[in-house]
Length: 189
Length: 314
Ligand code: FES
Image (cartoon, rainbow over all chains, first blue to last red; front, side, top):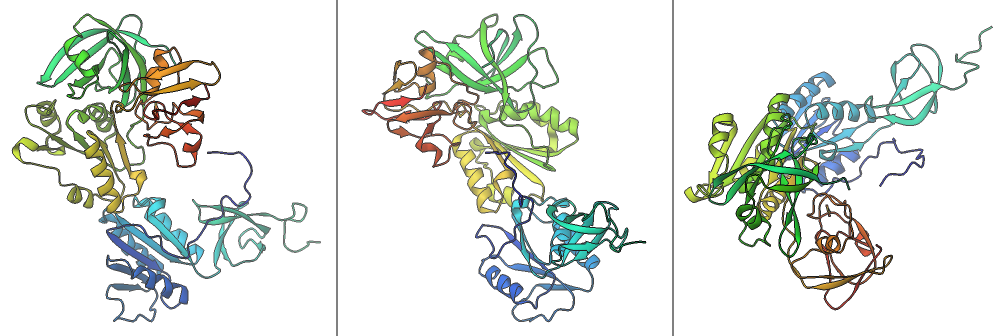
């Protein structure tokens, strides 16, 4: 069914609260942290599945080694990405990927997973934290923001209005000049 | 619906005791092009009725001069495959509906896992030239009964080598679906064509192993199952059509001169979607959702019920 009616929020990504009860032969959780309560709830939910859970986590998070026997921690995002890539290169269809973190983290990992051949339907996103990514449509620069509605571009200095439009490809919200008559943040003489 | 194509039977070849291959040439002009995985519907003028059965085109899509199909003689045939085997000779003329494709190879797949059961090998024969031209990664798994339903086996062995695995039930060799589907790399798509039981086994096994439906493709060419006779009343034209037990509703409508758009004639493509206003329906399609079934039916497979007149919006 397709309709042409404009849907203001159609591109706004939806995040999950609970993992879907679907079969898989292998489950992989990639998380920005293991210390937030949201992550703990997710881990507990994933522990209900019969298949063993493999976990990759960023930072020297406080990991309870008893509860989780296959947790690998990485000092930086590059190392984590490299490991995820290696794992996915040999993973079979039937692998389910759970990503947990702020929006910037989620969409970076998601893009990598997609390149490795995973489909939308095989990836679940759990958002924690407020950080998100803004894309300046005027100079094509990315910057991280939280929930502000206006932000000055760190590169070209334009005062950007943060649109609700989210680009899945860029993993970012579109930022457009908020006042064409006054493109710069500060009034110039 | 586009007009039927007139063809001449250029060659008939017996491939196995139950499989015959037919090559068709255009009576005039050129044949419409087709893509890998396409089928045509052959119109078979039997004495008492015209049957229309869908068959995969198995020729190379880049060879435009002819079409080729292979037909398996079915035990439970309503006469279609028997007609093709016993009546059709070289030089005969036949009518075909133009090619349609409901089973094309995915453009996203990085690896194509093809699973064929018996005569279900046919759509894959048109896949092979295309997959090779694309330089695609693929493997073909062919299950059959040796000496009976193993059409094209030697040819495939010679062409595909390692990429072909054969499973001869006569030699006690069977497909191991859990293993096969459990070890495919990310980016794989699976395609299955063959008997209903094989298609169901692949779909179920894939689902159980966590394959999303979008990675699983299948093609069925089942003649509509017989059912109870019933009567269809056409609301707009006022016609009354009696549907015999071995006719589908679509066939009975066609016989009565009512054309309904159709492609697969097997309840999967959604083309023949028809609204009904009253009556009980036995839904047998794989297309409509539960809510849609309250008002629509697929006449190529679904039927009314004996004793309750079906009122169609036609
Ligand atoms: S013709 Fe395809 S569903 Fe009826």
